[in-house]
Length: 96
Image (tube, rainbow, N blue to C red; front, side):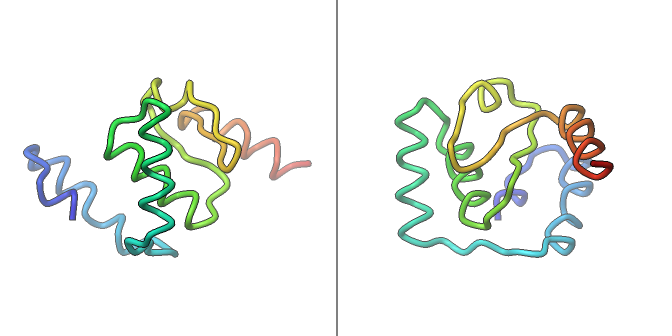
């Protein structure tokens, strides 16, 4: 698991519980790896490409990140945004 390699103990501890809150666990598959390779060709770093590919495979509507490099990329399969923008969008969607 990627979090096991995290050198920051406090961050590692804070991130660990999120796995148990997940509704979908994405397993490695040919389609995920293929999609990640395509995202790498668009300029994403390997781990970022894999994260986005997993989110798409899980049929997520949003990929929430603070990484501006990912946010600048426009994907047809998923909407990328930062947490603040997501909360604004969520409020609009929820109250429409």
